[in-house]
Amino acid sequence: MSTLLHSFTSTLLKITPILLLLTACHTNKTVTADSSQQKREFRGAWIQCVNGQFLGMSTQEMQRTLSYQLDELQKDGVNAIIFQVRPECDALYASKLEPWSRFLTGQQGLAPSPYWDPLEWMIHQCHKRGMELHAWINPYRAKTKTTHQLASNHIAVRKPGCVFPYDGQYILNPGQPENCDYICRVVDDIVSRYDVDGLHIDDYFYPYPAAGEVIDDAAEYRRYGGRAGSLADWRRDNVNRFIQQLGETIHKCKPWVKFGVSPFGIFRNGSGDASGSRTKGLQNYDDLYADVVLWAQQGWIDYCVPQLYWQIGHPTADYKTLIKWWNDYAAQRPLYIGEDVERTVKYDDPDRPGQHQLDAKMKLHRQMKNVQGTVLWYAKAAVDNVGNYGTSLRNNYWRRPALQPLMPFIDEKAPKHPKKLKGVWTSDGYMLFWKAPKGKSWDDAAYKYVVYRFDSDKKINLADPSHIVAITEDTFYPLPYKNGKTPCWYVVTALDRMSNESKGTVVKVKL
Image 1 (cartoon, rainbow, N blue to C red):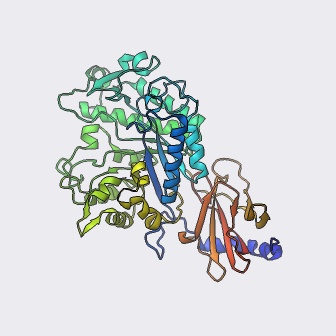
Image 2 (cartoon, helix red, strand yellow):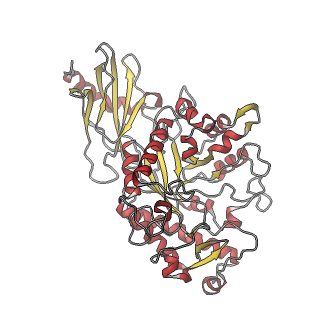
Image 3 (cartoon, helix red, strand yellow):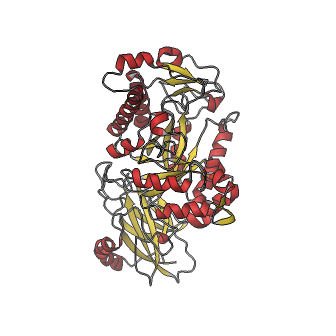
């Protein structure tokens, strides 16, 4: 039973490249019989620390909590975790540049005991579950409102002139070029030492406006303002320069690490800009000095996740209006949508009273040709299955695995296909084994594999994601053997760092 038809397989492998060249699909949006399933889709979830959810936990308790969350998110179909590792110029990882975070140990500068490195641990845990890990930092915030004591090696203690106070916080002054260099040095340290798949920053640039507060940067404006124009233009230019430099820093270190930004959900209101959205809220461009659309147009970022945390029908920031706006104006780079889990299930669908808005929002996602994914705010709400949100993902919208969206502007060449695919009986049962194809560098080496299954009487069509049974970093897959009477085809393809997919290698087995 364990001996395969080698001659048959050899013959089949000769025709495999032609067969799969015709059937493979490399678009980001693949229409299938089940329109709710996409072959390529970013399915992320934010795991934050700044809310204090890990305070008071021992190392073992935090690892147990995170393991449970990752297991549940994996069942929900999540394929990327955005993990907060630097909330206030501190670290949830071993850093020689910044102190350990109080959101990890309760005291800034105090190492965890028993010792562990949460970022390193999370990378391993995510990768073995087939998930990407994006390290999430807050670039400018140096102190939150609830932090009252800073470690002696904290940047605001060592160089107090580099920050300004604002509404109980400390902010690294974006008007000081050395702060830009400092943040990039911190990011280079993370990217160079850790096998992260992405580097992610959130919506905090210049601080959110607070009544009675003034940004203390007049001296920097006098010194550096030059020909930048107005104070507002100068502030935007400071952030623009930072974003460009940060992206260059990341890709110089590791070209495959994706640089993502999650801005506030409104770019500009239509009342102040004819191309703005029909909304009436705070604005990225005018209030946070974040010209997000420019960043996408210039290719300074690799993906954008606007935080559309409102509901369909919100009186000043309607979700439907905003998802259409971002789809139309920020499509030069992959566009994912930040979703508020709790608010989605709190409000009724305007067209179907008594039913919450998850289905309506997912339909809007499918209708937007440039929307390629979703990020859940926040992970624990999905894990807790608020409003059956997690159940709906795992049983409906995300029940099949999905590959990451393509980023041809980084790399578009696929790796070679896997070698020597065969079924083998082992002490652990019937297993599918293969060998990694040869690859000389990051852009042509196999990084993961996709395993497909087809009934023997079905046409092999790799564009149909319903046949994906696993996305794995392993070079083996346990076969669901029953009695050896069910013939079927298994196809294995290779993915590189940017999820470019190889042609497939095929084998026929009896299960």
